[in-house]
Structure formats: structure tokens, C-alpha cells
Image (cartoon, rainbow, N blue to C red; front, side, top):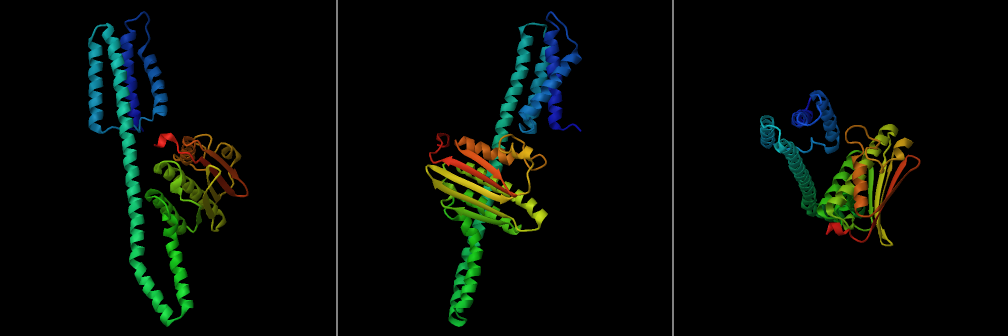
Length: 332
């Protein structure tokens, strides 16, 4: 079945063939149209894989306008006798498509940013509602503890406080010293882990938000680390029917931030393990999204002149990331 992306490249191949045939027919050699078409089909196939035209989507009205302009250029090319104008029309055809891709890529980038901001706002709202709810109930809990101390003794009050503190721990671990978006990610992942009976421990000597990079990079780095750990832990849990463990740590020593993440994990094939975090697309997952998380992590580490290492031993996967304390000048 031909989708919009395939149809776009098919039209480009047809238009390219007509433009090129028009020019070639007036030079010293002749080539059959089907050979030219086959050539451009091959070129378009390669470009479709490399340029990801499905991402460069412009709204339908502008798309129609582009095709009308291209059709007009093609019509003029056919009508004009061979002169330098023919070459100009061919170049104009190419230029219009380059402009289309530039506009499409920009629009796609803005759409991605919009979706990212909307997701962050949703996470902010969720965390705000949790904190607001706990604040609303706080005085009620204090009154209950006060009553227990007066009427029922300290043992019952202590038991109630232990239960209360355990409930607040989820929120406290996430927001302690963190910026809004980082706290939102930590809270969301912690809540998800609790719901899936996965033990997740945050052991931060210093807040993640102190890492010398933009907030969106911290979210991308930590979010993908935790996402990969959760995915591996789920698979391990399904096989062994036991509660898996994830622990993520951050410390600062000798001019470096040391970020580590350890999780239970099923055996990883050597062919994948050797290429993990090295080759794009190498992942333990299946499907379209395979390998994107590791690629994002590695790109962020490299961007900030960091170092990434990983080991797998006895069904435990361990990632170690070192980031220099000095902030990357690109983040200013």
C-alpha cells in the first residue's frame, strides 16, 4: 500500500524524469525515458531513507501550493525550446524541493518542541496536584497524631507516623532540590515503578538539576536511563515472578559528576551487548523504537564531553556516566 511519503517520492521521480529528459534530448546523446525514471526511483529511494521526508510534513494547503508551483515550472519547461532556460527550470525544480524540506524540517522541529512542552506541562500539573493534595491533608494528619498521643499512647502514633512518612517518601524523593521538569520525571517514573511492583531507589548526594547541562538534556538523559531500566526490569520480572530492583545514584568527585544506574536484566546476546551505546539501532527491544533511548543517552553524554561505560554481569546491567564539572559553552 502506498502511503503519503511513498506517493511524494514517486511524484518527485516522475517530475525529475520529465525535467531531465527534456534537457538530455537536446544534448549530444540520448537516453530512454524508462532508464531515467529507474535512475531517479533509485535516487528517491535512497533519499527517502536518509532524509526521512515523512517527518518534513507541511500542512496540506502549503503542500498543494508547492505542487502547483512545481507543475507550473514543469509546464513552462515543456513549452520552452531548448535554451539555458531549460537548465534554469531544472535547477528551479531542485531549489523548490530544497526549500520544501527546509520548511518541513523547521515545522517538524517546532511540532516536536510543542509536544515536549505540553508533556512537561502535564507532568508539572500532575506533580502540583500531588503536592497540593498532600498539603491539604497535612493538618488533618497532625491532628490525628495529636489525638493518638493524648488518647492512645505513643506506639499507635508512631505506627501512624511511619505509615504517613512512607506515603510522603514518593513525593519527597522526587522533588527534593530538583527543578520542576526533572522532579516531574522522577515522580512519574517512581510512581510507575511502585504500580508495577518494581523497587526503585534514588540515591543522590546532590540534585540531578545541578548537572552542568540544560534542563531538557537532564530530562532526556535521566528519563531514558530510567525508561530502559524499567523495560529491562519488567522482562526480568515476567520471567522470575520476583520484584526487580533499580538504583540510580549521583555523586560529585574529582571534578566529575558520576551518574550510575543499575537494574536487574535478562541475559543480553553478545552481538547486542558489544554494540550497545555504540551503534544506532542496537537494542534488546523489538519494533520501530528500538535503540532510540541508548542513542539519545550517548548523544547527550558526548555533547557534554562525558564518558559512558556499561557492564553486564549475573543478570545485572550497570551504566556509569561521567560528566565534567565545567559547563559546556554550547549551553550558555
